[in-house]
Length: 77
Image 1 (cartoon, rainbow, N blue to C red):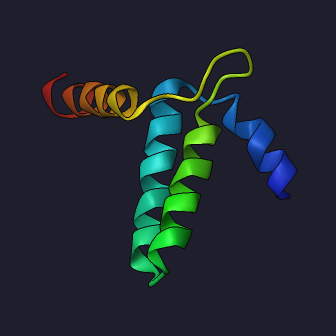
Image 2 (image 1 turned 120 degrees about the horizontal axis):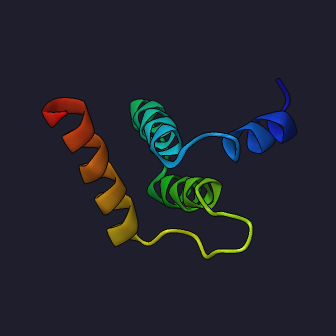
């Protein structure tokens, strides 16, 4: 799968699936030793993956809210 195909596939995922993907990517990035500036740039790019075409990228608060919703679904539903 090419990067372009992956980017297109991300938009086909639900918000919960996008969040799970984001968490997986963040864990993978944390496992690799990177310079702090590189890590911040990558996190900014990953936030862009959650951005809908006609909407701004989610804020930290939005991401935390999605994360909490996902955890509630996972452990309390």
